[in-house]
Image (tube, rainbow, N blue to C red):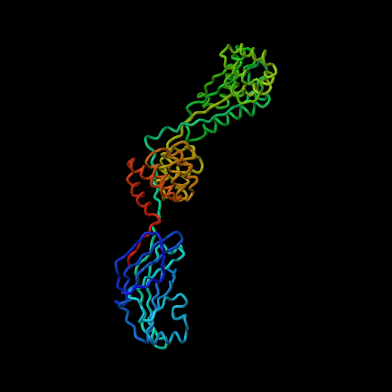
Length: 480
């Protein structure tokens, strides 16, 4: 048996072989066919058995392998076999370039090999994934007459492409009470030594209104139930401690009384406290500064001495710095802080929750975010927005970050997904998601490692996906 090597290529590639196929009513056979991808090229290697090809002296046959996928088609180098008379005729009229054009592999029938080893390297194009290999045969007789035409499907080529599946986690346990607080600071001014509120003194009107308006914003919210309103007055470490203690107490009480008159029934929830001298905040501001003698001043503040003694040491040892304190730090310490604590009711209506995701997401629990998402189509814009918003409202929650990572990956936003997964914890679902992210980044070895870890932790699906990823990029030969 003669065997003709049309092209020789030496490659390390995965071999995919089929059993012999007889085609074209027995006139041809494909003894072996391999289709491989190597980088940016497709390699076709097949043995075409021509031993049963019958041909008259006046006939020629053109055998053309064709790669086809939908409306995409690529004809490969044809094989021309010519009877004696046909060869002489075409040679005389067409010269060296005969029926199949310049790329034709041509033989006289008498010199034709029984088996032709046909090899072809093609630049890979994305449409070739899923393409089929077809053999076309055309027999021509005298005067270029077409005596016969036929085609046969002999196989195809397909690569495994990873298609991610995302696992969204459900918040565990009972929904916690949605306790919130609204906090702020007001700078209420008093004439030296006085404790009675003067609304029109300096900027007091605006500062008092700030407290009242913030409290009312919660009180007027039909979904909020206020549990407490806390007002704390502070004095600075400037002057006798006993005087500062009395002024802080009396001024805070005066403010409580005045604000209560503006708030009506809500005022019953107000409680007041005071800090005679705010050494804690004083220390924080000194520590954050770059002033000379900072460390020595901090040592006096931290000494634990009586407040008046500490003040005396600062005045005596660092008079220049103490003068600076009186101008820049102490005024800011004389302030009132306020906090409104309240609880938001539970929501069960999905439409209402979806509306709140856009308008007031801070009112929702993780369970409520998940409830809304569970009623939507996975991967939709609204679905993804819900989980991303949940992570924004609960930035340290592992489940919120895991679900947001999945939502980001579904949109192809892999950078954000990585940021979310950094805070998604060590659950099996989180490792699975890290495997998906690595696969989408084409880091297949890392992906398999994460997925096997998730599988070992009990997530059965992870083992299946790891097996799929091991096939990414491998060739799958499709039989006709």
